[in-house]
Length: 456
Image (cartoon, rainbow, N blue to C red):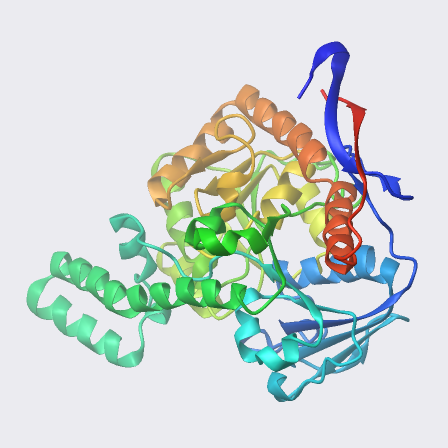
């Protein structure tokens, strides 16, 4: 590449089309198409989220919502979303949502493109079904944790919800006869037996499902570590996005000196919210006052968190806000907070919560998990650490003590996310993938060299 005179040379296809922000070019499809979207859930609750009928449960559902609105509805004449759980409804003029009892019974004939909103879901479709349509699977990150630190393993199985009933009885017997040290070892062994095989199966499943679809779009680069080199040719990485018109800088307008730490996480084990009561207790023990954790999310850990906050006497420092609407309520919560905490234990792509916190110009404290490692630089755009309560607590304490550090992290994160994760850039990358999928292979496009101004 030639960088003389502030220009960079790039090879692009020269067809009658638009040039994207990064200098590449795509062919717009003139003929509108029919698109099938296959997803575990989109509208409606399931499991511990049954009370959220019609709500978007988490990041994968928010992702699909934006993907349909911003990308698919621009190129499709009709979109049908097939979900395993939830309720059927009309999502928009072009998009309908249907709940199906069996994905094996789906007929994809007549569709031009199939979008699978979770790579592992491809295993529930037959090769015959997928052979009738061009298919793209979205991979939102590895869903099972690899080997973690001893501290994380001990914490992971600290609460009753992580143990089945038989496991809790065994744990109680070990504690009575051998004490807590042996119990900690038992937790680690229990995790190894329970999850090592599951992790190996998850890695094999990701590789096997890669063979079933035409293309895999991963939201992070970390997942590629688990994909065999021979299969990576099908993989593309499109980092997650943030809507800068929805999440934007603002300042608290109340005079309170209380530091508000927003935890935009559902109350499930992998999201790490089970450590919040202990984290609040630890900060109090270190002498910090006038702070409050605001946990915005729902899930099966709510009873556990309520008991823990009472037991540790941190009810004044921890507020369970319940489910908050992503588009109506979350921008306000980010605006009213001073620090954003994303304490994920596992199963994380390029986290929307991290990006939304940065876009709101708030300092973000997070863990080194999955695709979060792909977001910015530790110490410059965010403060990250392994999943360790004391290390997470120290990072929060640093921000509570040092206003200059808070300002630097907030500003750097804000600039970074505007440049690298804006919605328009994400849309254009997706448009290019869809165009590549639908181009006729027998008619290669001409190529020439063009010059594009460099982005500083």
